[in-house]
Image 1 (cartoon, rainbow over the protein chains, first blue to last red):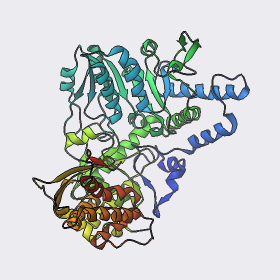
Image 2: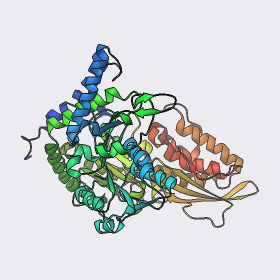
Image 3: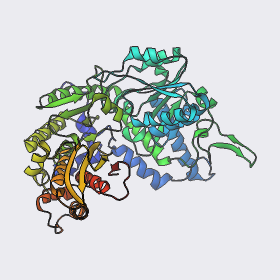
Image 4: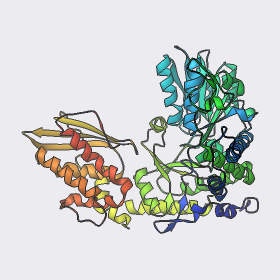
Length: 410
Length: 149
């Protein structure tokens, strides 16, 4: 393999304890990374260390431990800001996950800026989390939800996008990378066009964050959301990036401690960014864990991860095409390492059970993207999503398990 | 640990390939939709009930082998039975697919081919979908579509 010297996947695998386990007596082949990635020892250790030696609440104690926890928490924010290319750490708001980030924007920015007759523009390949918050907003405000169509291969129709953009378009909310199809969308062009039409842009980066280098300033998006657990970090922690001027102008979303500057029964005033949007005790260990995950990914190198995953994608695409009766779903020219497929005569759910018995973990179903299934006229797909620790041998194991499924079904 | 061939027995694969009573009854005395939101399986169950007896049963829909075979076998099993007998059969079937592995199985005749499901907890809802739909179809208080969630 050409990159054997450049990318030491064996060393990387050694960092992920769970990859050494067995399932049904077979070595675990974990190909469900689009659902959640596994966690390296470097993250697990930081979580244990935090609770063993630094646990305290942040930003309110004068005692030693509170100061230490606060420092670690703030440092994590700085690391994440650097990782996504934000101009300032105050533009990084901690959330529970990407979904919460989108809801925050829909409820805070949306309620203040979207009125009856306005339009919210999303795409045909969005995850439910980038559909439903906008439906709720549109229903409340009497605004309309418009959808950028896509081709059978899973590529957005950019001409239609141009036509859909208009003076009523208040916000374009689009995924950087489809969780079902693997499509990488041409965000820079889309953001430029949206801005030219006077619209604000939110990018759903839940999938992109672990597959591609992200630089929010270069993209020039107004908002960007990601989730920690798909970026080799803990569950329950996510990030909303917003341009400082946008976040400053937005009203708070949730009220409580930490997000205020002063409180009386007559009125309260809001804390500065990013705390204005972080009511209540945050997920301190989660944020610190995500900071460690970002450090880990940076130490491996996002460009190198991307190059390795592209090799895996090419190998996996060819390997799956050799399986009789298998049809790949999502064949965009620009793709990340997500391989959705259906098999003639075998429902994805049955495939999932059969390959699981071979130790191979894939996702089956509609992947929280029912409109994608409807658009393609299929009820469900099987999906193998590859991360930096996966190998060609694991793809071979999947292919072999699919042959087993064919044998079972005769 | 149970093997795949316990789950995917030949009878199940046969009913998946050639589902019995896979048609519409029009007009039916009862029509009920069932949906498994977890995996997207959908089916519509049609019943003809006369004097408290199910004289015809059929279904349409899409789903995995387990859900399709279960629906197919169910329509065969309930045809000719009274509504009360069908309800009792639901209880027995439900007990069979949710009982702990290695516990004794109720006498279920041909439906026993689906007993392997109890060793695959993630697939219990697939086998149960048609039966929950049946339960709703013969319920005294009809409601909207049934879901397994």
